[in-house]
Amino acid sequence: MRILFAAVSLVLLIACANVAGLLLARGSRRRAEIALRSALGASRVEIVRQVLLESVVLSFCGGALGLALSTVFLNSMVRFMPQNLSRLDTYSVDPTVLAFTILASVVTGLLFGVIPALRISKLDPTLALRDGTRSVTSGRGQHRLHSMLVISETALGLVLLITSGLFIRSFVRTLSVDPGFDRRNVLTADLSFPPGKGYATKVAQFYDQLLPLVAALPGVKSAAAGWPLPFSGSNIGVGFDIEDRPTAVGEMPDANLRIVTPNYFNTLRIPLLHGRDFAATDTGTSPPVVIVDQAFAAKFFPGENPIGKHIKPGINDGVHPEAMREILAVVGDVKQGSLTKKDARPTYYLPLAQCGITAPTFVIRFNGDPVALSTPLRTLIGSVNRDVPLYHIHTLDDLVSTAASTPRFTTLLLSSFAVMALLLSAVGLYAVLSYMVAQRANEMGLRMALGAQRGDVLKLILKRGLVLAGIGLVIGLGASAVLTRFISSQIYGVHAFDPVTYIVVTGLLTAISLLASAAPAWRAARVDPMKTLREQ
Image 1 (cartoon, one colour):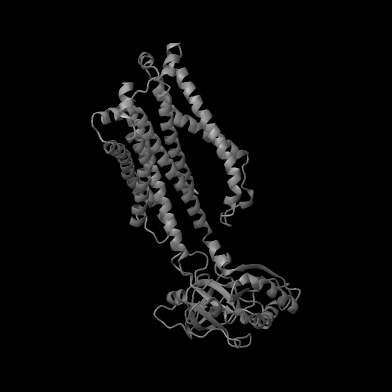
Image 2 (cartoon, rainbow, N blue to C red):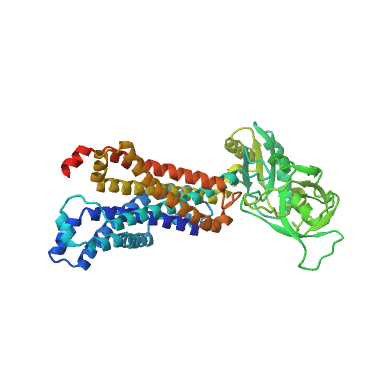
């Protein structure tokens, strides 16, 4: 949220610099009016107050328009918000938002209006009245101020564009992360069993009866069940003892626990690295067994083959007592709640038939769109037991996508702000160069009358625009190198000083600056020298 608020602030500063430049240009055209007011007795304070009032009114109108647009776009934005963002259904343009908008409008109106107001108030009424309403060339001080505003806009825009570029590349890298399983074409669904005596046994028997029927449905490639599923938002960690490694009370190691049925690893395509999968023969009356992942084996059995070793999980379903369990196999690591977390937490898997503490979630690999399976699956379960409802029907791809919703939302907002900053910077450069061309129209005409070619005038304005943009780019690159260090923990797979992002964004902003400079330069090259001579 701090990053997003910083991005909003940068866009607001660029807008303020933009409008300040426009008001400076507007003030230059009001020299005669302001001089006349001053000659008629208006004090400097009254002139400053008038100009500030005008700028506040303009900004207030802009804030009102922004508030109206926000009510239109808010519903669209809610669809992209991550589900774990608190109070998602309460976002609205409430009195707090309204008060903040009014305050921001007044403050920004004063912010971008104070410099033009002070400059206008310093006009010498005698000189201004003598010039009358003729177009005059602004002083060097005003040109420098315009240039500083354009440079500031470009620098701030580059910082925002680079930050957005880093988040975009990070998000692309996040989507390409291998979660340790194949999430495509898998339907997930939960069952709700009424609690009661013999719960563990009834749950295991129900799944033993139902899973072969589900696997026989048309289009189903394989079916199993497990709890909690990766990226489901649920997790359970349970301590355990390792055979021949006594530990003090309260100091036993712990790891993530998963309850699964046979064929779970095959259905999710979790690689079975060593050993065998759970089988139908691993029942409540057979020797207790367990499967561990790579992270578990590396942490608790470093340099050893864990298959055949024994551990005793500290969990009891009321039917199967705690007992030493033989490790049957080692499977690949699976990312559980975050695609970008580097270190996998050790995980071990127990068969449902030997630990019925819950009703695991169906995982069904379907040949086609998994959503099409929901209706026949409901019908099948209803035919077996009408008292066991089916709910929380999703695809596994949806669960993984939800885990990426926060970086997706951040990237979307930052990209939107970056586009705004890019457009505002281009408009600011265009406005300043257009104003400069209008102020120096007589000079351009005289240059061509004295032999300058149109191409020379074109190059003059283009050079001016590119020099301003270039200075802003240099400052922006330096600022980005410093500021992007603070977002390094928020991006994945991309360095804060990623050269590709810096080069691409700099090239893009340079190209946009060139386009923004082209129209004023072309207008300057089209000045009629004969008309200029007649006016002179």
